[in-house]
Image 1 (cartoon, rainbow, N blue to C red):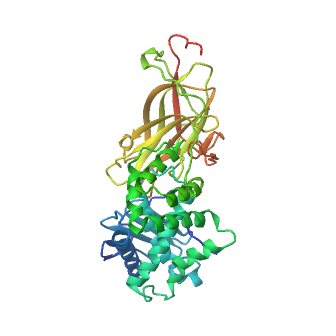
Image 2 (cartoon, rainbow, N blue to C red; image 1 turned 120 degrees about the vertical axis):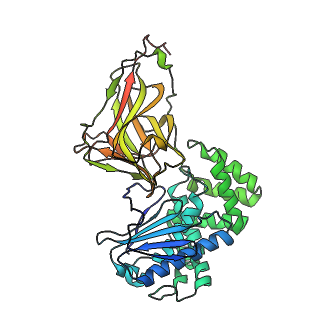
Image 3 (cartoon, rainbow, N blue to C red; image 1 turned 180 degrees about the vertical axis):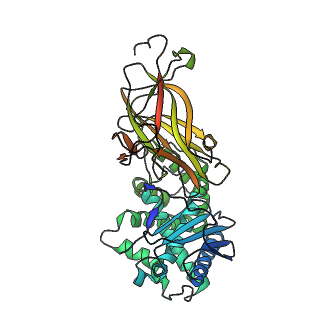
Length: 432
């Protein structure tokens, strides 16, 4: 069966920015603008009505914080199909031709359901901006569950004639989810969707929105998310049914990023020699650039001896997206050779300019290095905000893709232009 490539939580993928306003024509409906090029007006109109209805139901029936306006960009590219959202107020759809918009039984793709699925992601990601503690199955399962609910609600509002190539799209609503749950091997997404369905039946349609908002405000330790997550859940509803749900759900919905057994050991900057050494694998020439959705850019290094401290990380890159930097931090992690976090250094997005790529130096609290370590940077990017990190033309095999606590994957296009500066104390460190 033909499927879209989803760029969502838990998936590692290269992001290509779709410029706002790149499409040739626009259709505006209530709280929705569709910019489109290469498809007929009737399909753009159907997409606008679908998203408008789904947005209204998400706000009115479920009580979610929804964008004032959702912008949908539809483009044609003969080489790919893609559907993704920016977690806030934009959906991007790429089809190979207008034939991909025909009914699913003909095209093999589920565009109407897909729009509802993306609205489902938005209503989770808007309140829970830092959702790295949620597993990929949790995020996809939620969007699947609420997307199926929204499909049925859209049918109730818009009727059976909504899609130009008319079909009974109720088959892609809760009927679809129930079929998945009843299958012999439901898979991670369906399993998680069933868990969200059970929780919503317990809390009620308007009980999930305040729970998401509370989770979004909580300080959740990625190495031990259960402690804060269950505390918020218990404050929302403390009963046997919720406790039983949590016992079943925690292993499916949580993404635990185990910390390193190496404790972070910091040193005052004045106690260092002031003559740092820079470690690098790249050749200094940018041959390309990438943004990693659901992942990070990482490089393995080896200290030249004992007693060295990292003092700064240098990254060659540039911010993309809206002119103003997002009001959030990105993270630089110092990890052990198993890719487990030793220290986490947050920085404001404004450190990177929206211009030509250049070297950006990020000073960190001097932290003692193990013999082998990994430097990783993660920007939690979307189609409309992120940083393109440069890479050279020939890789050394030391560059990786992933986030701390996960199993990293080799980056094979070259070496990330990521370097670390290290220094030694003026006096030998005390023996432990």
